[in-house]
Length: 474
Image 1 (cartoon, rainbow, N blue to C red):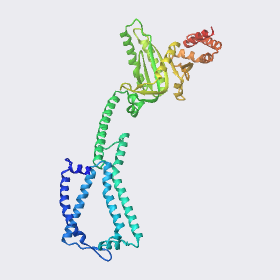
Image 2 (image 1 turned 60 degrees about the vertical axis):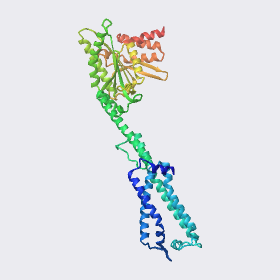
Image 3 (image 1 turned 90 degrees about the vertical axis):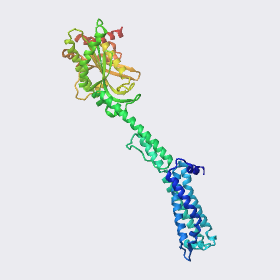
Image 4 (image 1 turned 45 degrees about the vertical axis):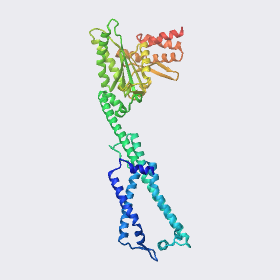
C-alpha cells in the first residue's frame, strides 16, 4: 500500500494521470451505487441466462465499463512507475485475485441456490452429481491462468533481454544507433538513459581517438603504415605489444675523429644520415630509432633488408671518396629476422620493445671484433626467397643464453669485387676452420686458418680466428 500511496502522492505525476484519477473516482462511485441494476438485468432461463437491462442498468453498465477502462489505464501507469521486483508482484495480484474468485465460485457453485447460479450450472453442465465437469472447468481455468501469467511475465521481462543485448553490443563496440530504446517501466527508462549516456561518451571518446589516430597516422612514415596495417596501428595501446615478422637492420658508423668537436661529429653524422635515410625508405623500410652514431631500420622482407644493406654500404664508400675533408666513416651492418614485438612508449610512435635490439648489439660487437662489414643470422637466410643469390660464409655462433644459439654469417657481396672473389675462393677453408674451432679441434682449425691466411693475408675474420686458436693451443 505504501507503494500505491507514493504513486498517488507523487508531485511529479503527469497532469493527465491526475485528471484520469478524478474521472475514475467520479465514475466508479455511481457505478457501484447502480451495480444492482446490472445484476437484475441478467435473467436466468432454463438453458442459461439472457440480458434485459432497463435504462438504469444500461447507464450502470456504461459507467462500469468506463470505470474498468480508466482503472486499467491508471493501474498500468502505476505499474510502469515501479521497479522490476514490485512490478512483477503488483501485476500478478489482479490475475491471482480473478483466478482465486473463479476457482472459489466453481467449487461453491453447486451450493448456491439462486436462479442465476442455476443458469450458470446449466450453461457449464455442472451439477452435484457430475463433479467431473467441475474438475475439467477448474483445470481449464488453471491452464488459462498460467498462460496469461506467463505472457504477463514475458512482456514485463522483455526490456531485460534488450538491456542484455545492448550491454553486449556496447562491450563489443558494435553500436550503430545514436540512441537505444529499451521500453518498460520507470526503472528501465533510467537504465535506458544511463546506457545512452554511456553510448554517447563512447562515441565521443571513439571520435577523439580516431581524430588523434588520424593525426598520428599522418605523422607516420608510409612504410610503417604498410608494415603494420591500419588495424594493427589502431590496436596499439600504451603497455600493449603487437608481434610482427620483420627483418631488423642495425647500421653503426664509426671512425669519427677524436680531433673533431662534438658539433663537427654531429654535423658529419647527420650529413651521412641525410643520404642513408632515403635509401631505407626507397627499399620499403622505415627507421625505428637512432642509436648513437647509428640507426635501426625495420623491413617486412629479408631481401629488401639485404638489398638495402648492400646499397647503404656502396653509398658510404662513394660518400667517403667524395669527402673533401678526408674524414672517412666506416660502417658495420647487423641483420636479424624475428617475430619482433612492437608497442607504444609514452604515447609516441610504435617502436620495438623486445630484446631483439640487445641481440643486434651483441652481433655488432662480434662484427667489430672481427672487423667485418656485414653480419646476419641464419633466420635472415631462411626468410630469403629460394632463388635469391647471395654470397656469404659462416663465421660462428652467438650464445644468447643456455637454451639458444644464433648462427652468424658474413655477407661477402658487401666488399669490392677483388676482395669478394678471394673470400669466396677460400670460403671452404675458413668455414672448416670455424667448425673445428667450435668443436674444440684447435690444431685442425689452426691448420685451416693458416692456409686461409697464406692464400689471402688480409682476411680480418680469418686473422682473428687464427690468433684465438693459437691462444687455445697455448
